Length: 85
Image 1 (spheres, rainbow, N blue to C red):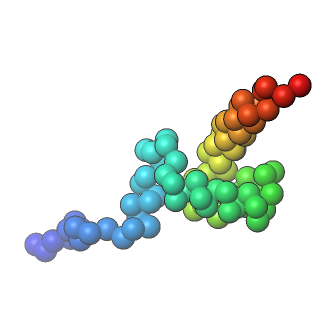
Image 2 (tube, helix red, strand yellow; image 1 turned 90 degrees about the horizontal axis):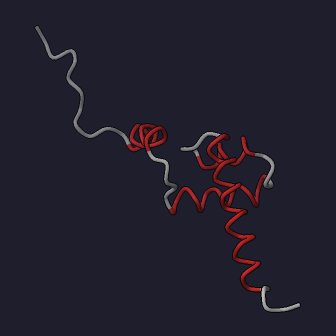
């Protein structure tokens, strides 16, 4: 025989991150930080560049995250300047 199918119990962090990618819909603080860095480096239009920088998200996920992020910013801005004419 032989333990052909035996896998080490501790998988590499990279493998865990790849698994996380498909299951986790919520962005971690770390991912969001990388997202912001990517935006500054590549600009808000280069989703592929940002996605590559984040590493754990696809460009589609990055685009969705960006849309929600900008909506949130717009709402926050409106609230602050709402009382000035």
